[in-house]
Amino acid sequence: MSVLYDPRDPANVADPFPILGRLRDEDPVHHSDILGGWVLTRHGDVRDALKDTQLSADRITPFLNHLPPEERESIANLGGMLQRWVVFMDPPRHTQVRALMNRAFTSNALAALEPKIDAIVNGLIDDMLDKDGDADFIADFAYPLPATVIAIIIGVPPEDIDRIKAWSDDLATFVGSALETPDKRDRAESSVRAMTAYFKDIIAYRRKHPPEESTIIDNLIAAEEHGAVLDEATLVASCVLLLFAGHETTTNLFGNGLLAMLRNPDQLTQFQADPAMTNSAVEEFLRYDGPIGAMPRVTTEPYTIGDVTLPPGERVFCMVNAANRDPAVFRDPDRLNLKRPANRHIVFGFGIHFCIGAPLARLEGRIGFPALLRRLADIEQTGDVTWNDSMVLRGLQRLPIGFANRL
Image (cartoon, rainbow, N blue to C red; front, side, top):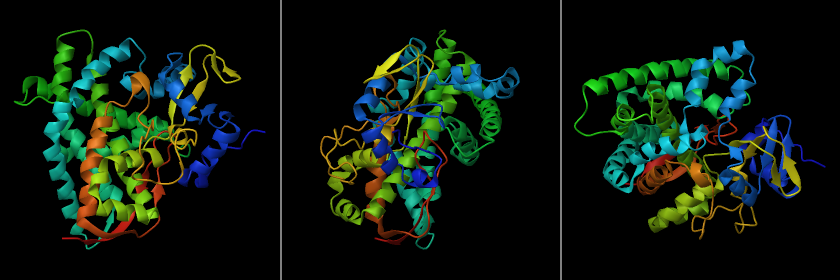
């Protein structure tokens, strides 16, 4: 008998792992009428699906093609932009655009960012300490840190972050497959129009006034001007994607990671006493309750998993957080172990679509978490948390905390 899985259930939103564990054990290739697709939960199945070219990353075109013409027209800007996001592209187009975007995340580029990230981290902690021991960790640290960093990388003014955040939140309801936000299409369409106009203005200005130190916008402009790889619409879409993806996942890494430690105080105490465990701690945060819940794919031809064959055109939800607690791969998977060795999580994906910003997210985590634990004492949760409405993005809207100054 199939497991009854309702991703809209508040209990499953707050803690999806018990029901995902049942699916993994009892119904690992689960058909969901609610989601209109198949749910994969085993590590091997998820990993194989993510790397298999029989499964397309383009879930936008089939969605648009199934809409009545008037509905498709009502979100024309949204659909057109998302079709130009590299995360929804298949080769060969994916290969071309990804090669350009990779330039922003080279090891040399990231090394140059380290002192800037460290300064932002400590500035945000200074601001939290000015709040007399109470803060919303998401609003006061987990969001502004990666948002400011990605703004620097792309080359947009940090003072624009608040309005970019508002647009990004609206876009996240659609991209993240929100299940309880009925107006998500309208909100996302409106914000995409605003973001398109914003980046067109910035691009036009940068064409006339190139800076002494190039940012990724300048690199993408140069690529657009010297070849047919990018048109202006793809250039704009790539900027929006980097801003969106560059902060959403890292915000969730910090929020989910701190909450996991607060719920496992022995691990918090260990980490405070031994900052040398930072690398393994960050990887464990990513595995234990990672920033991505699911990575959707679409079958392009018959696709067989065990004794189940899916026909072409089926949506497949690769539940990476479920895969990352598969006992076939991870010992004692439901336990937070910040010293876990050989952590083979797949929260950043697998194959050609492996997250382009993974090195940056890891770097921010490796700088941010030790600084927080070094400077804040007696950290505690002081109120209820609120989770985002999203199938794809796993993260908190708010995490109220109390703390004292260590210094």
